[in-house]
Image 1 (cartoon, rainbow, N blue to C red):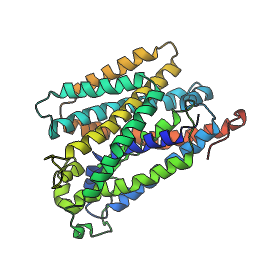
Image 2 (cartoon, rainbow, N blue to C red):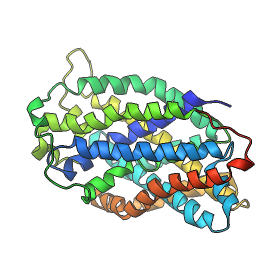
Image 3 (tube, rainbow, N blue to C red):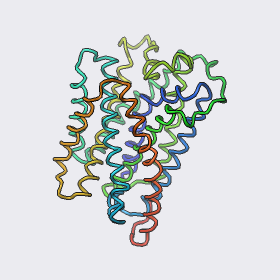
Image 4 (cartoon, rainbow, N blue to C red):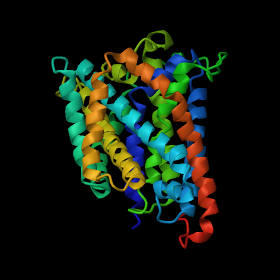
Length: 359
């Protein structure tokens, strides 16, 4: 069944949810000026990766990437499915722990951290247990409710900017080997993998995904430049969540609420909870198709328990940043190896499939 607009919407909102939290701080800390250069470089890598990935998916018909790797040879699950499963697990851990940290800092300072993380996992697990169709419906509902809120705050965030901070436009420093810049690829690696898991449940037109990817570029640019233009490089680089802090400086007289940041945060958190549900469901698919004796329901209960235990073992924000650094190699492996392998293996199997790619 063609669910192009649903898949496109889910791809878009999950990436928007990833952008506004950690990404601005990583880019701001990676270089002192010319921030648009690392942004465009990372975005270009993402476009190339998803283009190759979707081209490969077009070759394999109604199969998903798990079936593709299992059908190639005995070593393929170890080379590709194991890294995918591990990366999804690490992504779940990072997202849950980060969300708990943000909620504690912003407006639930007296609530125990474990209770916040437990709630996130329970809701996301429930959505994942209901299956991909439930994820589609939830994504559509969340998108229609929260995308207008995101766009509203996005437009009002320029209230206190000083455009002189945009200069200089060209950076004299090298950012390619900077740890913060390498960590920023967390936004680009992992989210696109869901496109290979929705088949055979849904088909989609790849040009719509590319249009949605292009629509992410303004969010990437302004999530970094709004804090820079508001506080300047020296001050913005001291914040863990620069864009969220910037929103606290916005004053809208006709709004009855004192802190309007809460509405943006709830919208972004709902996007990340949807992404968390997709990651849990995708991890379950990897394990159950590799080991059919495993029951999906049991896995969708065991995986969140494992994630919760690991999250409780992370004491502070510095350890979360260390976790980002530790999975850097796996992140780039996913970003490079999965699209290329999907393309070459899919092209190899093209003659065995009656399916034609949807352009």
